[in-house]
Image (cartoon, helix red, strand yellow):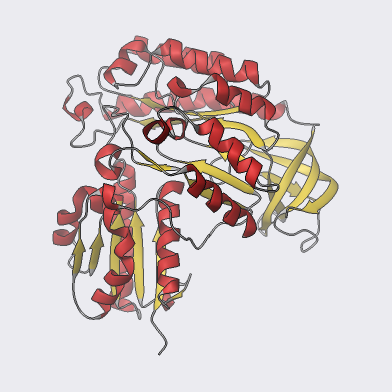
Length: 450
């Protein structure tokens, strides 16, 4: 008997996407058909983010949109799961009666029984602790040319503004051999770029092996795979070890790109944030990486408008951004999250001040990014083709300097449609810089990544 069609909406970060892919695998194994068309689905599963206010708003908007389909299309049942449910499971159950299944992060492995329950007419509310989520698992990979590989779950850093420890639980590293085996599987499925993710990738191994083991893990992945290259996201400045710096310098398959959220540079604000290490730690991390691996692309994120942030604190942040010239920088306005220490702090900053500081900082970073992009004009670079963009009549490509889904793209012009395929390696010459994107012409076609 043919089973119902399942649709998925996956919100939030790449770590959430890997959870979605594990659920997809479990449902496919149980005989369900997965459909990308929401109007064709019998059940839609929404894997939510609930990290900050904007993410919660996006999750709620998606629930309301899917609820409309339930009233006006063939959709029978809705299941909401993930981070929003981990934080507000009972509230979601109460405020959205049209939702048939509610699963916390810790209950994601029960997705098949949840689908069976709701299709049988039962309302399923499964609110397990986050630590009950198994690490790893078979996946249906939904990305192309690259794949995310989650190496740990949870967080022990306890930043005063962050709800992640309450949502995802304590930090738990996956066994190294388990990660290496998954990397081999991902490469076998066609991933030419494997992106390591966790709440704090640089903490990897401390709980299992008594030491920071990210560099060792990277070496083992490269030793046990054929050609897939590795990119690392979500590193912390206080854990940038000499060993990791050497790996960036010496490992040809480790992409010279690192993501290090620093959040601020004022020692006063970093202390209030309960960040590990002050401004000197941040400065040293940047200096060590650039010294060990000249030309490395550094991406970072900062928070403006944190409680107690003075004009002087903000000026220190601006000066740091101006001086350090990070190739990639994103900013958030502080979001007071209930249950976090920062939400109870005095000296909360008015929203209009937060927005003004955000606009000012991003205007500065835009100038820096434009300067960096202009410096690439006339240079030849190696890029991987992602897809053809009919709007611009060009191929979207990425070099090592562009992480997928985060950074800008290289638009390859003057190449006829259907002459390239996703995964092809191209030698291009950069001809123009437009905002965060680049325009290029084809110099040479390489081989498709294997």
